[in-house]
Length: 423
Image 1 (cartoon, rainbow, N blue to C red):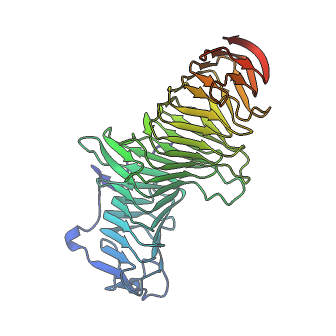
Image 2: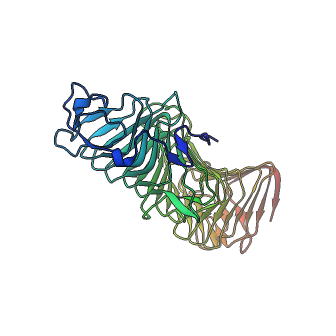
Image 3: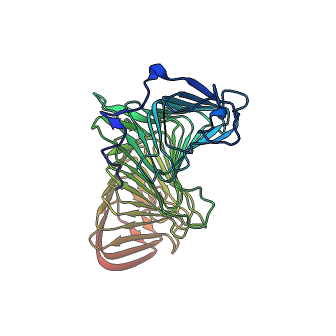
């Protein structure tokens, strides 16, 4: 896992050190009066002057709306407010903001690029991203939020690290995502480079509210990994999109009553998405969907699918960790290709009804590999009322299948056996 350094130059006790106190700060607005778009040009600011140590506004004046600005040196400032479609680009330099960094409004952007000389590219006491605004992280850039919090109503996208330094006295969200958290590169390039976004904190009471107002979105692009080392504040009620060859690694136990959608793409060589980390509990109302035949979801984390949850699988689900489905959970193999694989662990299905064979074709396969077992201890299976037939393919490769439905069952499909069946 990727972690930021505990020692951060420019910080003392979680506070950012600056050369000027806030009592000496001047309010400066970008008026584009210089010959260029760089911050060091004193005529770009109103009043004219070097912006170091000041409260900066970009986009509040008509001359600044929609302007693209470049942080062309390391700067330490009091606060930064960007609005009205304007932007700032750290350009590989280090920006320290002693107070609030705020970006808001449609097409307003803060582009954060890796500062190779000193680690974190942006260090700010508080970070606010309003509706329509975008904070873009490039080149494994690192963002450190001090004694404030990170609040997102817009979009955070890219890769690198988010480090939360506050020390709350009780469990408190230091990152609230009511917008979109998008990891990796947009999925319009062929087999994009692997990218990781790591979210970490220094205090045991730090939390992440991943869905904010209940509508927050988490989107993992192709070959992207979200490494979340901070516990969630509450169950996730929003939408998660897992691109091909993506990994969602939530280290703590967590709960979902929202939606997880697995996506595929012809632009990516590996289609498989993975959920790893701590115990994942699917609560009532939670839905996990694989609606295309080439979509693959691997559970490397223990799964508890509680009553009222749904796993609708038209692709392939792979279990590398224990899983249990409650009596009124809804896990089914659907369509022409709905399949499942159990590796080394135990998957127990207690459902009243379980569709084990989809459309009953040779492409509907259940595979139990060596050291694994699949236990069905429920009602009917096969997809219909009192349906106790398995019409697809069952592969037992050194594992065990224990079938205990309400009555006798019939294997009407193909059984490839290199292990045992207990009925």
